[in-house]
Length: 293
Image 1 (cartoon, rainbow, N blue to C red):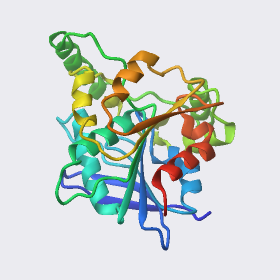
Image 2 (image 1 turned 180 degrees about the vertical axis):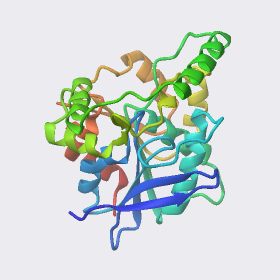
Image 3 (image 1 turned 90 degrees about the horizontal axis):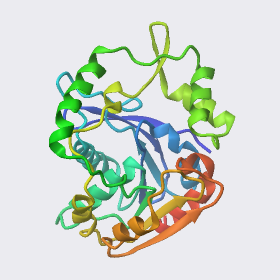
Image 4 (image 1 turned 30 degrees about the vertical axis):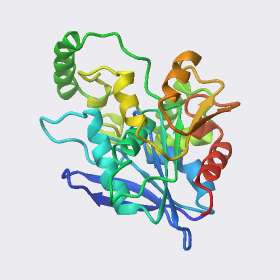
């Protein structure tokens, strides 16, 4: 399987996005893979290699992740900023048919984009939308007013304090496996090598430390559902049997009712980071959703 090409996309927001692109000489279908929180495009590698046999595949690094630009001085990572970025990325990379895939936070970004652009006269909607454990977090009961002060304090500390450091790539790989015991050692080593950057005294993760602060606005199911209800393409929710981050069944059912056309699949022998654990199975589900290359 051929290696991906690095692309750097200048977006209207002023940021430059990095993306991995697996070219295909004949496919009219582009599959865009959107990673989750504190992950990066390389996390899709094993799924993308399966899909690239038949499809054109692109995996971007979201802002402040991987090799994409961090937000500038004074900026913050407000959630809908990712959606606007994805709009620009899709416009630059898509072919005739689009299949949009997101994992976790990236699935929320993908579904919000699909809803926001569902009725745009000049933007062809995706032919399929795959959400890997991506219906949002549990609904927060936090009062918005009580979150704003702590958010300001965390923002200040994140910019003043040093990034967490690791001595070697092996240490980084070990940390990945502590949080993801199902991650194979060779894949952990690959992700540790791709996902770290040198800093004085060792290595740090490539993501902007500002991401580890919580935003001022809590998740609200109804806001998400207002976008999901606009989606008309077939949607697929994929959950992993060993995941510790699945929503309660009744909450999942309530959220799925917002979609016009949706089905669910459960993947065995996989946790929340299922694209690392069962890439061939995940790729088959995505390919079936996309139909003809």
